[in-house]
Structure formats: C-alpha cells, structure tokens
Amino acid sequence: MKNIICFIFYKSLIQKFNCNMNSSKNQTEFVNHSSLTSALLSWKNKSFFITFNSTLLALMLGLTSCQKTEEKKVEKPPATAEINYVDLNDKQISGLGLKQATYANFVDKFSAYGSIDFNENASVQVFTPYQGKIIQTFSDVGDVVSKGQPLYTVESSDLAQAESTLLSAKGVFDQSGAALNRAKELYAARSISLKELEQNITEQNSAEASLKAAREGVRIFGKSTAEIQKIENEKKIDSVLVVLSPINGQIVSRNAQPGLLVQPGNTPAPYVVADLVNKWLIVNVSEEDSTKLRVGQELEVNVTALPNESFKGKIKVISSLVDLNTRTVTVRADVNDPKKILRSGMYATYLIKGDKVVKGVGVPEAGIVREGDGSLSVWTTQDGHHMVKKTVTVGMETNGLVQITNGINEGEKIVTTGAIFLSNMLTIDK
Image (cartoon, rainbow, N blue to C red; front, side):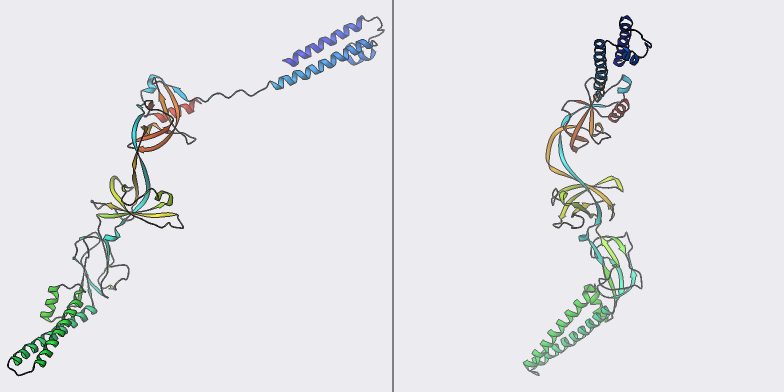
C-alpha cells in the first residue's frame, strides 16, 4: 500500500515538472513532454534542475525507506496458548464418573518374575542301592505314595551274596552255640579245663558278631527285621531287592521299566518322588533390586496359567553372589500349594509389600490417563461441566489407588470413568 502511495507522489511531481517547463520564457522548444530524460537535457535552468534532482533523490530514499519499513513489520503471528480444558453438555457428562481425591495410606511394593520349581529338599531321586535288573514296578507318574511304600523291585546278585553271608554266619553262630553248651556241661563234670571253656565262649562271641554284621549287610538292601528272620529260619536266599519310597509325596517322574539294568547314581533315576504341597519360587533379580529383599519377607505369588488363584510365600534364601554374566542375584522362596495345582516350570510373578507406610493424596487408577508424549494426567472439575486437564506425578499404588505426589490436592473432584474420552476429545478439538 505504501509503495502505491509513493508511486502516486512520484507521478504528481513529474506532472509539476512538465508544467514548469511549459511556463518558462527561456524555453524555445520542447519536443517530447512524455520523456523525462529529454526534458531534462533541454532544460537550461540550472537551479530548477538541482531542485528536481534533490527532490528525486529524496523520493528514491523514501521508496527504499517504505520498503524497509514494510519488511521490518512482517512478523510471525504469536503462538496461541495451549488449551487444556473441554466444556461438556448434560448428555456428555452423564457417562462420566467423578470422585474426590482423598488421603490414603500407601505401602511400597516390589514385583518381579520367576518360575515354580519342586522343593529339592523334599524331592528325592529314588535310585537302587545296588546294581541290578528291574523285575517289577508298582507305581506310575502322578501316584501319591507314602514313606516306605514299594516302588519297584530289582534282582540283585549283591543281595544274594549278602544273604549267603548271612546264612553262613547264622550256621557258624548256631554251631558255636551248641559247642559252648556242651563245653559248659563237660566243665561242670570236670571233664574239660577252664581254658577250653573260655575258648568256646570266645568262639561264640565271634560268631555272634559275624551274624550281626551279616544281618546289617542284608538290612541295607531294604530288608526288614522280619524278612531277615524269615531268611534265617527258612535258609532260603531271596535275591529280589525291593526299593521303597523314602518320603511321603507324589511321583513326578518315572524311568523304570521291567528288564532295565539300573545302577546307583546313574541318571535318570528310576523314580522321582516330590512333596507337592511345598514348592519353590526361583527368581533372578537385578543386583539393584536385590537390596530391597530380605530373608523372611512375605510375598504374594500369581501364576499366568492360573489367573484365579493366589499363593502365599516367604523368602528363604538370597544368594550372596552376583552372576557376572547377567548381573542378577538368585532368590528362592517357599510357596505353599495346598491344592497341589502348581507345576514345576510354570511362569510366575510375585509381589512384595514393604514395611513402611506413607500417607498421601490418592486417586483411582482409572482416573489417570497416559498421554501420547508419555506424561500422566488427570481431569478435574468444579461445576461438573468445565473439565480441566492437569499433569501429575505418581508414586506408590495400594488397593486400586495411585499416590499423586505432584499435580493435584486433596478434595479436588476428578474424573474416573471416561477420563480417556476427555483426552481424546481435547486432541480432536486441537
């Protein structure tokens, strides 16, 4: 606009110049009034020429000044303030839920992941005590067994040898006993000397010691006192070794088949019996988190495969070593499973509550909205129609309430149900 005004002023000046030329008496001839250059060359009045040049120079500077002034005044429009509220009508607010922010007690919680395992202190691999061939099995996987219940039998040459030694020792004992009785009678009749009687007594004591050792040699194969007595009375060798369950529990693994040759300590064990009521939770926690745990701390265990079940446990062992590769510490907790529904290897989460109670402002978890930039916000209102978004900082969580450490105060009315709807509505309005 200023350029146009300057152009009009320039044109009027030229017109004035042409008029002065026509009125001059010293001008003899003016050929072309439309050409400013020709007129200036034919003009002989130096004073007017100087005046015109000065005026023209001022005009050109004015044009430049106009352009610079215009350039300086071209500025970016100021940014509008961010809108953080929405206004709702009666129909829109009917679907919202409102609650007041209140003070509540909060307890620090620590959660992590682990896996269920059998209690190895109550889980036994049942090997045969001596090499042999399995003859018969009595139990299968899943069967509940009692301590002392037969699991399988093994034909053992070592057992036969031990029983043979027992029968031999029993024969020597019986013979030495009979000889001692005769020696006593002869000594009473003064037929033998005291030295001979004492010799028979010594032989009897030695035979008795050998018999006791032979009985213990058979007992370590699992034979009871009654069974040993039966072998002595019947004088019959029984090479079948019965392997018994050492604990009360359930069979969780079986690798025993008739005809299989088994040896002590050779894995896999023919049977594995475990106590299923008491299980372990094995976790590998980071070295930073391990400082938050202590032996005896109670925890709540949940298993993904059993969403409707919850289990109680207690930390039993915290390793004193940090794994150099994973930078984790192994933690073991005892978990009670009265229903016997947990399985070894199940993926589990556990939650530990701290001992320190903190009081603070709390709001329902549903009232907190995670925005697109990662920040957390809540929506507050005073009249129920004008909703204002406030960015908050959260802390601990207890019983569905989230601690607000910064952003709102006690007593403020916040939106619970439908809070995310308001955030979406604000985004659309922008």
